[in-house]
Length: 151
Length: 96
Ligand SMILES: [Zn+2]
Figure (tube, rainbow over the protein chains, first blue to last red):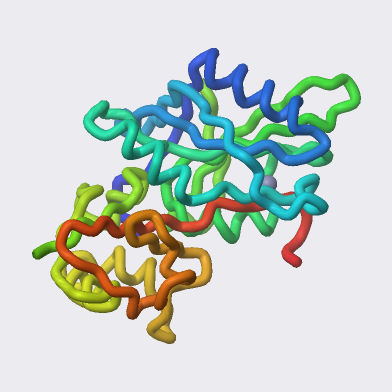
């Protein structure tokens, strides 16, 4: 499945995007926040220009440990972006009570989105600090998902 | 008359860089059969070995999920827009 280019290696987040993701994660807590990441892919780097918060469509009693984004949000957003040179380059979600690393559930979905950026925000720290980490699924790499440096 | 089939820009590597494909057919199944030769990677993602659309894949005809229509037998006509979008979900903890 891999074309040998090696996929994305690094993520750059605009200040706006970073702030929006963290703010959404804090607002949604104790539920998981989720949304789309809009930007451009520049060779092996994903440049996120802005975040688009989405409703967590998981059942209400499960939203503290689950998130679901309506796939029609992807269709709508990409329609709006057509011709702009920008597209959906990834997704973000939060782990209100956990570390910002992909869970086994996350990994099952990441596999269907090869080479997009998955930002995960942990907001469960005792000091209230948000921890943000980036991950990518490269179908050609046995160590997937792998962490991507931010910046 | 051809039907437009769209895939998210993030999946363009499966379609030789195209996010908009053109296919012929009167049902979704026929469209996918028409696309299979030119885009085998994409079709491999969409269809399981059982010949059905994979659980984590969503197919919309003019914005309506084909699960609420006639699945692969959902009729299409010229000018319709078909979108293919994998599910976006996850969560903390283990599956269940
Ligand atoms: Zn998660």
